[in-house]
Amino acid sequence: MGKIAFVDLKKQLDFLEPAVSRAINAVVAAGQFINGPEVQQLEQALSEYVGAEHCVACANGTDALTLPLLAWSIGPGDAVFCPTFTFIATAEVVALRGASCVFVDIDPVTYNIDPESLAERIEFVLKKTSLKPKVVIPVDLFGLPYDYDKISAIAERYGLKILEDAAQGFGGLYGDKRAGSLGDVSATSFFPSKPLACYGDGGAIFTQDRQLAGLLKSIRGHGAGSDRYEHLRLGLNSRLDTLQAAILLVKLAAFPQELQARQKVAKRYEDALRGLVLSVPEIPSSSLSSWAQYTIRVPAQVRDAVVDDVKAKGAPVMVYYPKCLHLQKAFEYLGGHVGQFPAAEKATREVLSLPMHPYLSEQDQDRVVETLKASLKAAGV
Image 1 (cartoon, rainbow, N blue to C red):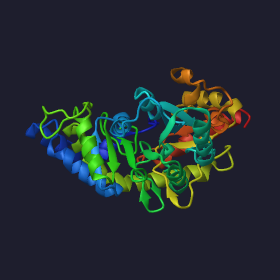
Image 2 (cartoon, rainbow, N blue to C red):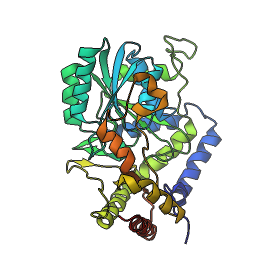
Image 3 (cartoon, rainbow, N blue to C red):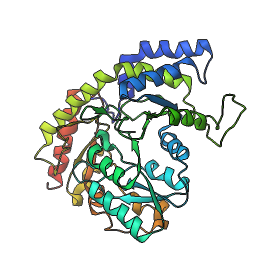
């Protein structure tokens, strides 16, 4: 039996290779490796897919979060709210701007930012600190868009900007709104493990605001004005290179079919595992997950042993995430402590993510499920 891949980019390439090769060869032949026409074509195609007026491609998903904070002049004295149960980039960009990252607990079912916890943390900042609440960064974790209606109501009440972190959510839906269109600004990543992925680093920012889009384009190119040697402001070097844009154009064309395939993989997992583990993902009826990860829960006392056993038997599994951000050494200066965010901390002890990609065969998926079942049984579950 062959090795099972957690995310199988090789199998995807087997399907897309002729188109990918043509796209790469065309860029090489044209020689426009920076700001070639494919970049603008991709921005237009992404805008149309997401339902945003403007798309600004950039170098990576972290920059896609950084650029809006720069455009909004977020810095010292400002409070930016984000979940503690997510990848560090969501909060890292805040700290690097000199702003204060204020962590928030998660909903234990969706894993996304908990509206009640958000409101409580905003009130804490207003009453107990001198910080100014400015931005909330809700994350579309594991592919499920955040609760747009509730978070938007809170943001409007307190005058906060919403920066949607759609790095994992690209392709997902909240009602009829596509992930990437749910914030004042939305950011996504094309890192190879993401639902829509390039062959390196890449990212994009979406907004309905034309003036803001122009500002973001200036900032991504060293703060340039109408001429590359006219600098109106300080900025970054955050261009998406033409080769990656060309590859993404090919992958975007195949993405709707891949998204359907992800739904089928998720449904087979649910049918096989419901009732055998503590929980399988619950997707609200009004939403669609892009299934960046398929994350279940198992008892905390056996989780790590089960992970080791499943891996030893050849089925790749991962833990996203084993430690909350408020407990990470990088953020110890904020004074976080164990027990501060109980839902998130409980999740770190129980979550377990299974292989998920649109080219996962039923045979390999069955192997993963049977291996997991055997490991759970051996652990006494």
